[in-house]
Amino acid sequence: MAGTPRFLTLTDVAEVLNTSGAQVYAMVRRGELAAIKIGGRGQWRVEASKLEEYIAQQYKAAEEYVETHPFVDTELSE
View (spheres, rainbow, N blue to C red):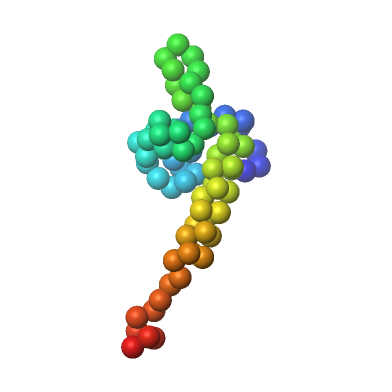
């Protein structure tokens, strides 16, 4: 993510992940995605490096899922 600011808004994160701001907020509140609250209004920010770590973890989780749940093409097995 060259040229990205150090901290991203939840809207920015939602755009990167191609999901909604509400979904990102839920991920933060569940502790799935590390974030900090700043300012008097308590706005959430996600450090770009934490977002990259989260993405890497999701790739690893997907890889493990694929390994433990092999795809079976029902058309080929009939």
